[in-house]
Image (cartoon, rainbow, N blue to C red):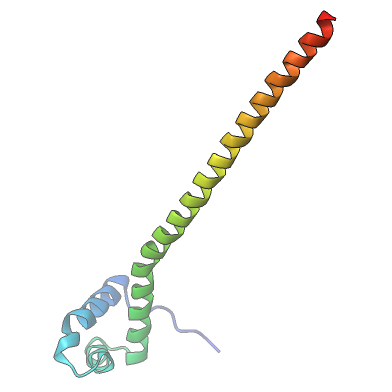
Length: 107
């Protein structure tokens, strides 16, 4: 079973996807628009649908990443706050034991 290579250049794919977006309102459904445009560029409607879904996923990825970044930032800020609190406790404990050691040596 041999797999056919990419017949369409990235420019043709981008243009076809853009045409679906621009002419969607001229048709009764998105599938009708895809079928019409696909026949004009020489591919199947399913191929064009797959290109459109891939492009939509690429556009949605940065938005999803922004949500992940916000959650990660919040987590890191919480961790920094806890570490600063722990450092302060350790600083105070160190000073306390240093004073206790000095008192013990004087006796």
